[in-house]
Length: 109
Image (cartoon, rainbow, N blue to C red):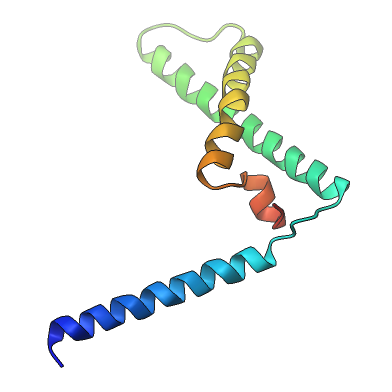
């Protein structure tokens, strides 16, 4: 058997192993979660968004601080950032990965 044939067989086996892992992961996902699991996943997502919003506010404040400005009303800015992230979060994560971070953590669909 040539080296190329061996590599092809290894690639096929790796592909089969990857498919097995994906199927096992799908089996572990709760496809009919309770209301409270969904609620907790949503709360986790919102907590993540608030944390990311605060981090982006700090970064924004540092950037404009180098130009001699500062954020006078951080609450307004953080609400704007949070609103933008909240609008973009679900379509991006559910479109790309089929689940949000909160749903992944709780293993629900």
